[in-house]
Image (cartoon, rainbow, N blue to C red; front, side):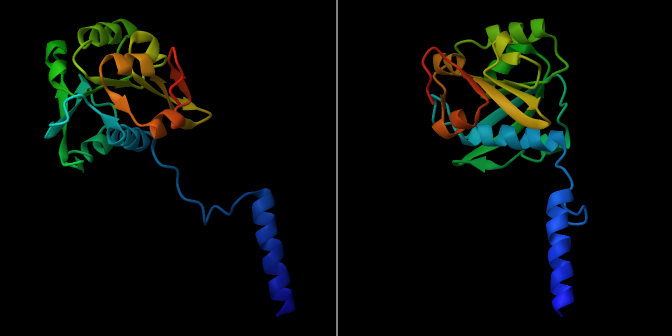
Length: 182
């Protein structure tokens, strides 16, 4: 019995020194599923100026690069508001959305045109395009050491009358603001 406990202790110690035994490790969550989860959580911690919204339109411009994980959040509710996922290819139709996701396959110029067209419409813009906040996007998703992270352009969000929870601001890698709201 003493030997079993001793060998079990050695095995546990070695598994931590060498690394956790793969038999106990969980498979990594796919990046697309993580992006969909982040988008959902952004919605949870955001308040729009018009609080009587019954349907929250999360619009994807041109191509749903996230795929099924994004479709899976369709019809979920947040504060009595139902999430509706829409695929939109007309820039002029994006103003009817509360959130617009701009996939990384778009050019920086297209993203800039879209963000300019949405000014003064209280639409939260999110993208996984590199350096999207430089193109006017409010929340930019990116990989940082193989982990999903995000930057927030707080001034752009504030100018649209949209409010983000301080919890969300604290989780951001970078918050771009004249005054730091954290």
